[in-house]
Structure formats: structure tokens, C-alpha cells
Length: 124
Image (cartoon, rainbow, N blue to C red; front, side, top):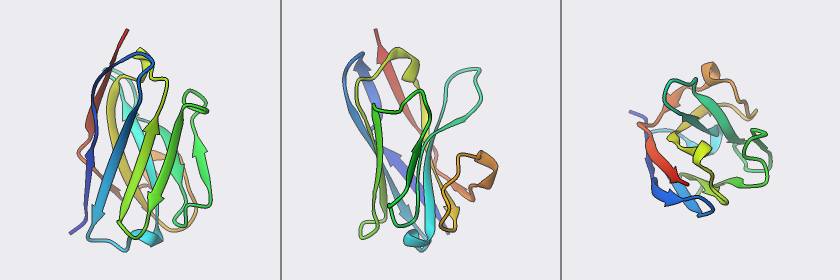
């Protein structure tokens, strides 16, 4: 059974940094593209970052480009989201997701497995 477990969320002030982690089990991690999504109240879930199975390719939403960095450690079956210069608009539940195959994607429907989410709250 596949499990994705996020951690690292919390309450921070604007301008602070956080690092989210997502530990994967029950799948051959190195054969999955990974993504970080977020969902704010009354908004659609959106992809903020994705990384290819090797880690050689990444992509970001315009709203986080230059502030967030996605990375992965295939030896630890873990994907990370480093978030800098956080803004109140970044407040959301953050989910990691796994997509079988090499090509990264921002489309929610293409992801096979999801974590339970971790709350990030940024106060002004």
C-alpha cells in the first residue's frame, strides 16, 4: 500500500521560511514524478511545484517562482519543498502527490497517489 506522509507545516510570519517534507513508502519512488499542491479555503487545489523522477527537471507556479524550491532524495524516498519569503497568500493545506512515470506535470488528475496534507499558515 502506498503512503505519502507530509510534515513540516506550521504557523509562521510573513517573510519566514519553512521546509516541507514528504516521505513515501510502498512504491518505487525513483520511478515517480512528484508534485506539491496546495489548497486554500474555497479555492481549487493548485500545483505549486513538480520534479521529475531523477530530479533533473523542475517546474513552478508563477506565484512561487524564485521563492520555493522542490528537491528530492531518492535514497530516502523523500521529496522536499523549501519555502522562502512566505506571504499570507501562501496560507493553505499543502499536499504531496506522486505520478507514475518520468514526465513532470502540474495536472492534478494525472497524479496517482496523495498525502493527507499539512497546514501552512502565514501571518502578516
